[in-house]
Image (cartoon, rainbow, N blue to C red):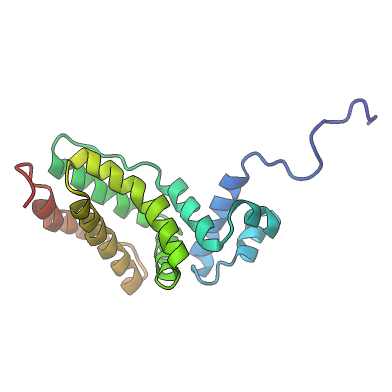
Length: 192
């Protein structure tokens, strides 16, 4: 190939889709090895990228995992006409997401790391919790404190089950969670 016909693309791996490849590698590595053993080195190897490629985009494993979770979750699909239906759909959605391979482990792991890492707690609050709090606040018209408590109860219960059993909550237990939580938070006649 002559210089005149050579590609104008810079040398090295094409950068299109690197985030998707790294996110998939993150979840598969966490799923296979567990959160603690899923190091940036191992994630980079699984993704087929240099560790520096990851650190240029994410300054820490926690930042990577938060972005990975945001990608995995996407927006909360609030479905239904009343508040009870909206809350039930949110509970079923997050339970299903947590049961996806690697997602629940990554979610629980990054939360565990945040207990002793104030900077990571801030990232979690601003980047992961806030968009979902805002969506629920708008859909439900509930005060922020009540929406945050709803999130705490639901996500805390789902992560506790995962931590205690190593398995996500089964559908029958998700249905029982909906039956327990929605009457308290979702009554269409107003907040209790």
